[in-house]
Length: 359
Ligand SMILES: *Cc1c(COP(=O)(O)O)cnc(C)c1O
Image 1 (spheres, rainbow, N blue to C red):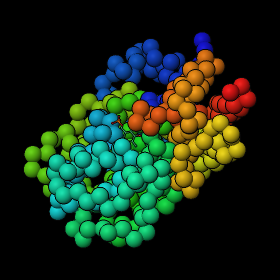
Image 2: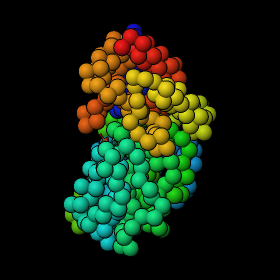
Image 3: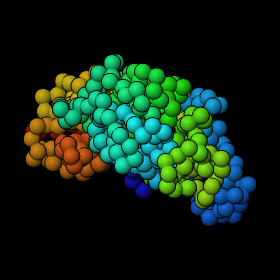
Image 4: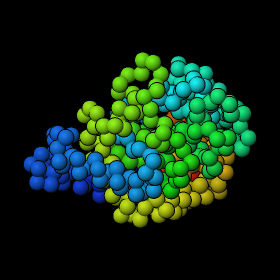
């Protein structure tokens, strides 16, 4: 068996310990004689899995009691519709456009109401986070929406926008559990789990209780109502059971590592190693403003497409996989999520130095 260093932006690397444990439990989950994939979501064994997963997540993120945790299907993209359908009471929302994912979310919300794009970094290919200290927030806005870490462009909000009292909704897909957050600053925090936590197809929604109501847009499907899922504790229908099980294991792994403060330190140390090298390299350059750099996704270029392609190819041969940048940006991107060990980034930087000397 050979494991590579996988720098994929998502689905992405998971902790090896978690994968080994899941493998050990594949045929017989703790004496049940079956896999978690095969068991009833109403069984005692699964009830323990989902209850512990929620408890561990609450502990990790210090989630207050007046927030619900929902384990849902449809990935992050389904939230692009679910958020306006459930929250657009005045049919107005403000969006800050910092990349493809925020753009897509805004376009989807526009099907349901008026969308104001109150700030954007499109003028410089989303290479920075716009100034959000004095935004033209609409008086009628039901919420202000951000994508907190921009997976494709490699930017991250270092400070949350001043929403002037409006509810903040954040897509945290690619920075979920990478550092501590103050949940009370948000109305809704959500993320697809395949970047930093578990298998694709699942999304975790952390939502303040008072935002969960029956007063949704007319025609909202049952499956897209937060209240339905909150009342049923994410068991309205068959939930993404195996996904919840793996996420639960990752939560325990994070707790064993020491929690989110420790993850933040580790992530900063990993990112620093790569960024410091990019800042001194003659061949490779980072593409975003230093103050807005993401700890999770690090895009870089040589400035020469052929050289970029050569690098990606040779890196793959050296066991460093999925370094090709997003098709809309080109160049390279190293995603260095929680489960990427420091040694993986060391190996990448060593390879980049060698490549620089040879080219
Ligand atoms: C990957 C990603 C998405 C889309 O996730 P899906 O689960 O594929 O819908 C949305 N937002 C961000 C920030 C992402 O990184």
